[in-house]
Amino acid sequence: MSSFKIEGGHLLHGEITPQGAKNEALEVIAATLLTDEAVRITNVPEILDCRNLIQLLSDMGCNVVRNAPGDYTFRAQDIDLGCLDQPDFLLRCQRLRGSVLLLGPLLGRFGRAVIAKPGGDKIGRRRLDTHFLGFSKLGASFMASEDGTRFEIKGNSLRGTYMLLDEASVTGTANIILAAVMAEGTTTIYNAACEPYIQQLCRLLNNMGAKIEGIGSNLLTIQGVGSLHGATHRVLPDMIEIGSFIGMAAIAGNGLTIKDVSYPDLGIIPDTFRRLGIKMELRGDDLYIPRHEHYCVETFMDGSIMTLSDAPWPGLTPDLLSVLIVVATQAKGSVLIHQKMFESRLFFVDKLIDMGAQILLCDPHRAVVIGHDHGICLRGRRMASPDIRAGIALLIAALSAEGTSTIENIKQIDRGYERIEERLTALGAHIQRVE
Image (cartoon, rainbow, N blue to C red; front, side, top):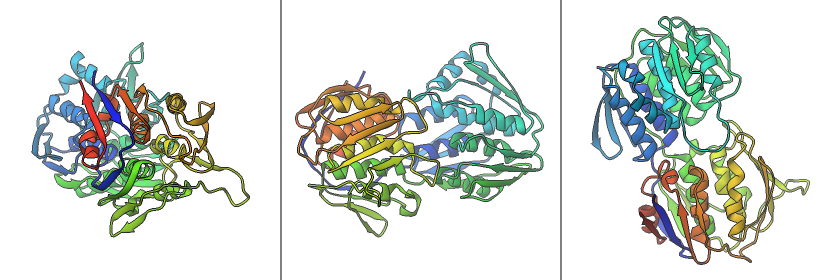
C-alpha cells in the first residue's frame, strides 16, 4: 500500500491549475450511454474514480478512445447488457461510488440495469432511496438481493411524471434526469439538486437533443425525447480542489495563484474562507492568495462564535469542511463546524488533535476549533486517510507541520486528486510517494 512522506514547513509558491471536476466528470461520462453516437468530453481528471468508471463502460462494450490526457471520446454503440450479471463486473461496481450513476442511463435507454451496492468513502450512511423512489415514479420496478448488495431495475416504458424528491441528492437528481430524458411525456422534478455539476449535465444532455428547462433551479422540467445524438463537452474546474488549494495557500503558502477557477461557479466557497480571515484577489479568472502570517476568524454581528455548516447548493459543500477545519487550527479565534449530512466525516479530527490542534468534537456532526494563531505549530505524525476529503485535509496539515508526517492509505487521495504530489512538489512542497 502506498503512502506519502511529507516534510513540513516548506512554503508553497507559484501557480497551479485545478483539474476537471470529479463529480461532474462521473455524471457526464455516464450520460454517454444514452446514445449510440460519439460523445467527446474534455478536461476529464485523470484520477482513480474516473478511470474506474471509464473501465466499467469499456467492459460493457462502449468504445472509448483517449485522444489526449483528459480528452476522451465515448461511443456506446454495442452495449452488452449480459456483462451486468457477471460477478467480476459487479465486484468492480462495489469499489466505486460513482457506479450508481450507470443506473439512470441504462434504465432510460435499455429498460434494465443491474448494479452492486456501490462503495466509496467511509463517511457514514449514504442511502440510495432517492434514486429508486425517482425511478419508481417513472414506472420502473426494482428488486434487491436478500443481503442488499445487488440491485436490478426494470422499466421498458418509462413515463414522465411529477415528483418531489425527499432530499436534494446530487447523484439522485443526476440519475433521475438520466432516466427521464428519454421517458414518454413530461417529467417535473421538484427539490432537485442544482449544483454546477447538475447544471453541466443538463447542458450536455440538451446539446445531445434533450429538452430540459429550469437549469440552475430546484425545479426541473424534462420533455422526453425519442433519442439523443452525439455532442462535445468540457468539464468545469473542480471547485473542491480549488477550495483545497485556497486552504493550502492560507496555511502553508507564500503567494499562490490558482489559475482558471471559473469564479462564478465557486458559489459561497471564497466568502467562506474570507470568514476565516483569508484574503484573496480575483485577477481575471485567477485567484491569488497572498502569504498569511496571521488571519482572524470573524464573529457574527452579535459577537457570537462563527458557525460554518454545510447545505445543499447554493450553500456550502460538505466536501470542504475537512479543509476548513485544518485552516481554522492556525487562525486567531474559534469556529464551530457543523457537518449535517454525514455522521462519520468529522471522525478524522482525532488525527489533527494528535498533531497538536485544539479541537473539541462535540458529537458526530459538530466540532469546535480553537485557533492557535500560529502560536503552536502542528507536529508531524503517522496517520491514515479515511476518505478523499479527510485525506487532502491531513495532507494540508502535514505541509504546515513541524517535522515529517506519513499518510497511509493514499489510494483514497488518488481517487480525487490527480498527481497531487507532483503538482505540489512543483510549488515547493517536499512530498515523497513511498510504495
